[in-house]
Image (cartoon, rainbow, N blue to C red; front, side, top):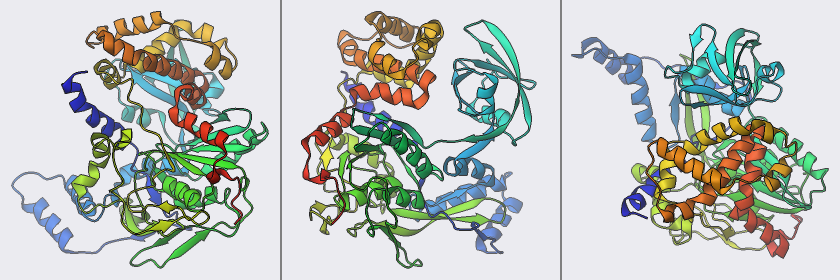
Length: 541
């Protein structure tokens, strides 16, 4: 592997990790969001003078918004100003729905590719299928003219009950099909996947803590319970957070009453305690929570409470380290401020917020973790504060001030990395090839009715990998060396299979495939089989 590749690999990895961490954790208001309308002040006067007298034309709105964000960033990394034009989209991820036609899409070769028609949405009811290409929306040609995701949202989303005309191209029949679709309310799910890992162990993957997450979790849990679930693996890897209340409701399902789950406190906010208050559905089974460097805020509340009460094991890598709570304030023009008003503390009293006095260092923390070897198990725990904290049942030493450190560390798998792989990932070629492969084999693959049959019985051959290399070279990727082929072949085949499965079975299919080679899942199953003290199976103490 070249020195040049080694130099850039951490930057690429850190960029991927940073995506999605903007959610944080929010105090969900009981009623309407607080509204603040500012009066005439020095900032307004200064802005007015600049607009009237500056030598060049000034876009007042842009200048104002950039200044506000700069000011907030000097306070802490997570206070943020959201323009009125972006507020609705920002809220949708947590409110759990939007209005539109109900398709999940990717833009491939300047064409809108339907990944799936969302369950219960208008597009699914009309028969739009995975693999369809949307080529026209109303009078707008949307293929081959530089279409962007933002443009797609503007064209396809709209008020419920309104209509939109689209034309799709279906490769399987080589036909163009017109549809008139009545937009509706489309749910955004936060529980991505749930399945039985073996005869006794259930698995639930939560991607964020939104308004409907607890309800979705209960539905998935009850389905697995009917399949004789006795142990649970809760996957919070890459989960950037969300509503505080949702995290509390989830932990309440695991702890008997009354037990402190989390408390918050700030300069102008008195301490507020949140404790388990009802009979939970899983208070006595063996529990494992999976975390990594992308798990933040609400994810850290859940894993911190489970760890502090010795309710189960936390497995994976050190979490992000965000212990700040934001409260929403609506401004007079319809924009909003999400301002940090307090810190949260786990039951043992630790605040897991990492130091942010050096803003630049904070922004590059994930890169530093990769560069110093922490993600591969070579870094120490010097990031934590020196105050001793101890768990409630087994009085084990735990750490604050730098995220949640797992009870069992599992290093990131870099065995497949190569210069060739980084090139194809940066160009999105694995996904593109997967779409083309499914187009060519759709009848064969859709004939497999059960996901487990696909996972266990469908295999990508060596010829498929050779075809992929040819495809990559056509897309200006350098011919891989023999070493690069050996390192990356297994990973490429796994991702191709997972992405094909995702088009048929959505996220359930994707995770079912990738977990066949998931070392963190393997570590969780191994821990369950050893019946360790942390998995005593009860929170009653």
